[in-house]
Length: 545
Image (cartoon, rainbow, N blue to C red; front, top):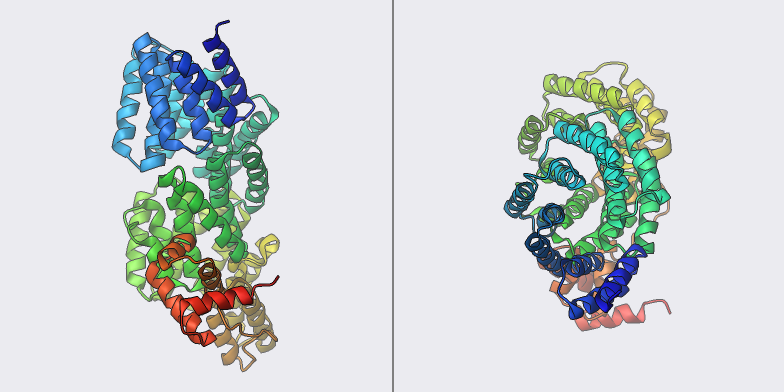
């Protein structure tokens, strides 16, 4: 074995052991001996794992050219398809993605059935196909992979088939496929760590889409442990995005804010285009917190992004722009016909908007569709949301059995009784019982208020306090003392103490420099200080030793 082949062999071994830095060193050394596509290919993968994404693309592009010039059209086609997806993940460049997929197709024209054909088909389907097309293509690729005895391709296609099945509302069937894929991915059957990472990501997306918070929590823990063990920034950022959404849904808002902010910064260092998902979740959290100006800053420039519909409509409703929110949601629903689970959150918010604008007839039709989706999926969260919408509709219509639906919603939320959804259901129950059972209404309103205060849901706190005032009861749950600074002001003060400028603080906290300026002004006013320097000194002197 010559020196170059030895370096290549050691580099491949290091990749399999997840020793990315050692792999990089071996492939660098191999390239010094001789220019080969294998060395470029391996170096590109090592750089990808080290989150040096642009450099990784450069190396794998050069590897693609090397394989093509050598006549290895199948390997070149695989790399072309891999590079196609990465164009979107790094720069959101869909035109470049289409070009790379077309190149991959051209290279396989005379190849017949082969594993590389399966990779090109499934990679392209995950980026461009409808949900129905994705399921059909993924199942075809699973069959091809089994005929060629390729476990990596089989598991990647299987998990995507499961995701498509879940998205189409066949949740149990889809989760069975996903569980099978995860069993293979985590047992050692799958050799490519990249495929295992992708399998985790698709699994988390499916769990989140299905509203399966327990399953999401479990797989997030496993995935975060895997990401730390194998130093995978991409998976770590993706996990934190999903986990941030879970934490927000279950009422752990401070932890959610931390997880989402960390995800944004991680994506900033690598796959920049994917940061949008964490940004949009953080924006929706900001609306729930009543921090509408910060939500506006986060949502700026995303008006044409499909995933921005919910936080944008949520923000518009909070700002009293019900008709704008309705138009946005109805337009999105016209374009989201294939996946009932993708429609569910849009339907739920649309019911709230329609009730706020007094259109009970349309709200009833939308609620009926939401009920069908919940029944089809068997999800406790969706069942609770459907019951909440039904109860709200009945309360607005003056029907006597509204309280039954709120109680049913809370039954479905026993595992998530600290969530915002549970708090809002309790408040709706209080409103429903105001005339018929005054003591019970006070109890439910106080329970809702406690839930909202713990999370920091400012607008909901105000609503619950208003209901308690209408009931002639105390508006607070107990001896909570008002802090001199808000949580955000405390964060800004801490960063001032480290000498950061307004722009640097804005970047760190994912808010605008103007918002930071406002916070600094409030801090100086509340603490009776005259300058940023005094504020920094104050922060240092009041930091626990």
